[in-house]
Length: 133
Image 1: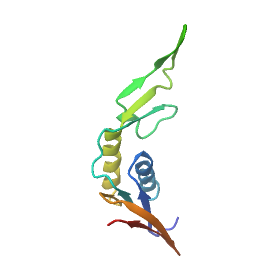
Image 2 (image 1 turned 180 degrees about the vertical axis):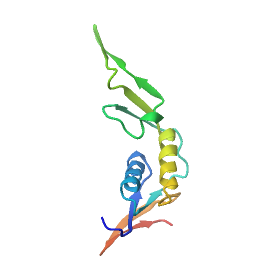
Image 3 (image 1 turned 45 degrees about the horizontal axis):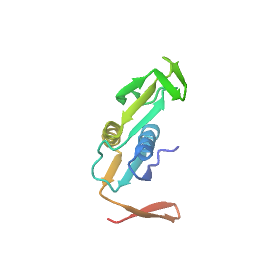
């Protein structure tokens, strides 16, 4: 890419939207990112879990790690174990705090909360997010 500044708009500050924003800001040093989000608070209202097959930037935030699990069925129980690929548990409030911090610390990312996206208007040379603000 050239030294030309590029702006990105992301609708939603959930796991996907914030992860995308962080990746854009890290990989494209000339990029600016604005995230539009209707919420104003990010409570612990969900969790994300994954097998740690390869390292991610979020692994250190996990609050639980399991290397063994048991499956039960009528008259049978099976236990498996893997120290190489633990199962990680990440509460949403820890993820949101860390991701929002990375976006804001970049100096090129902006989170607009309390604003609902109504649509995207595609125009020549780009697109605009239509909001209720």
